[in-house]
Image 1 (cartoon, rainbow, N blue to C red):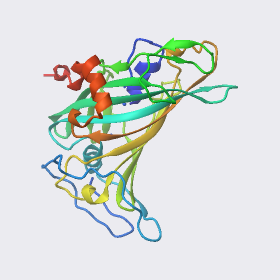
Image 2: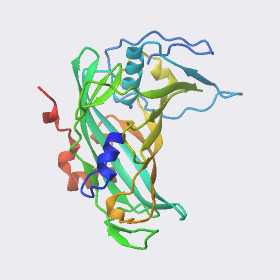
Image 3: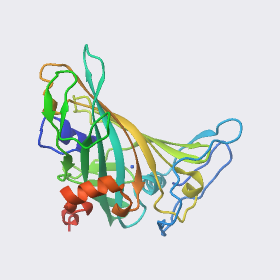
Length: 304
């Protein structure tokens, strides 16, 4: 999502906004074989994202992967799907806060949106991903869809439009990490993630750092989780996933913060869905009315 955030909020007001197992072993003695499953998870699976704590002391055990390919499979099963070709739909809410120097931190707008993408296998353990984001603004207090809002720091009223990103250049994923398709060279950026068992959940704690040459306030971190029993089932290639996280980014141009030093902070929560048929009714009705073309992924962007 960092690459998307840079495009969306680095000063271009017309830009849109967008937004990832094998268990090697734990101190508790759990061991699962390396993943090689080919079957998927049907919509009839229970997509639980919370499990009650164990009796007594909470179980919390970290585990890691010696094999980068095994780690990649774990990340894809959780955040995407370990399948040659698949649509992946994330639905989320996020709230944006203004962090201005010398001012109280203020919430300014809440968005509801989706990140809808498709991946395709293009080589040995290499996947190309293209997608888009469609986020609609809601009032921070009432949750109603809005078209304008008050900047609580400057006192100015601004029109606020949906933030839609359809110009994502795409991404290549492999065991060595990820590489944006608009980046020169073939270097991959490795992922920073820690996997952990927490009672009956498996959690991925991920940090996405900006490139060394980005001298603007960008950072993102997320927690993504799935039921442990399903995670350990090698036949499930597309796990249900809950997600939450936060990120820091520059002021969007439409807020007109002018000479007020500072930045934005946002937090989100959401989950992976099986398809657009699972979207909440109010969101589905809005996107179907306003942007029906974004209920499918544009596959023409794939190379070859």
